[in-house]
Amino acid sequence: MARGGQGLVRVAVVVRAGAAPLWWLGVFAAGIGALVPGLTGRRIGFLAGAALFIVATAVVACVRRRRYTALARSAARAGKHDVLQDRAVTVRNWRRGHRWWLLLAFVAALGSAFAVPAAAGLLMAGCGAGLWLKSAWIGRREQAENALLWVRVDWLARNAGRPASKTVKAYRSTGIAAGDAAPGGARRKTPALV
Image 1 (cartoon, rainbow, N blue to C red):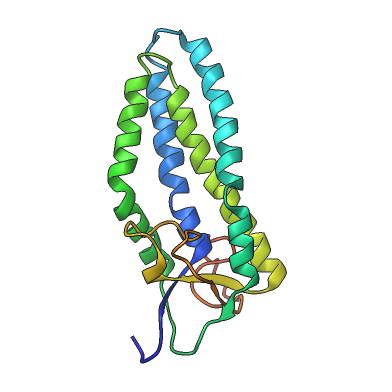
Image 2 (image 1 turned 90 degrees about the vertical axis):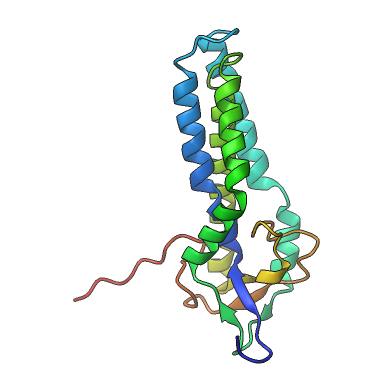
């Protein structure tokens, strides 16, 4: 790393990194759980799961928005010596840091299907949907401000998550074209060759 520079990761990419694993593991757990009649029966399980899905999506999408907004408002421009981490590295680090939690949540969702079929799987899927919505909200903010938001790598939690925790003092910002991820943390689409 260049002298005086910091390693930076995209805030939206960190938020979005858990969306796909939570969504797909939740969908699989709900699908497998639907095969088990359970104590409450499938109908009650799916109704409870649908309610949990909606609540989890809303809570995860909205939690800590004030903190994200405050950090974004006070973001300083990234320096020329700052090193921008690739999207794939950020996603890999997040998933590696959370792999045991994801596995434990998946096993718990499967086990709970014997009591309430599909409910815990839909809860997991709702958490994934909420993370997608939150990253989309960050992306809309980035586009409106015409600046991408970054956070120092060493301010993230040990599992490469929590980009709005108390240890995060401030965000950095760059132009909208910096890095290899689009606003919101999705893969940047390369322009078509003519």
